Image 1 (spheres, helix red, strand yellow):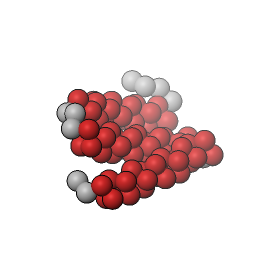
Image 2 (cartoon, one colour):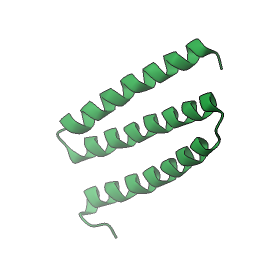
Image 3 (tube, helix red, strand yellow):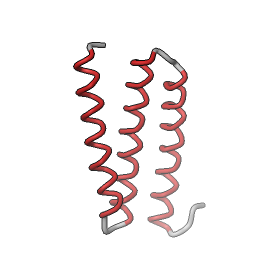
Image 4 (cartoon, helix red, strand yellow):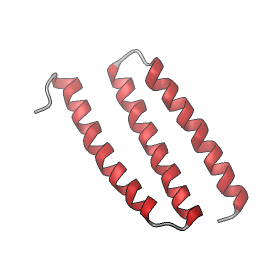
Length: 88
């Protein structure tokens, strides 16, 4: 990967991470917080993938995959709890 593209992508994901973190802290409704937190996790997955490619270590790809699966399950649980008031 070209070095300039890598640094631009990392900078962009860092800016998006700060914006999503601010939205998590400043959102008024629980639904907005759930959505912002899910978006923040997607940004973190992107950073893990970039880091894996830059370092040439496939372990970070496994971590990104597991984080994606856990984030999906967590988002489903949070949305179900938000709508019904109970988990199951």
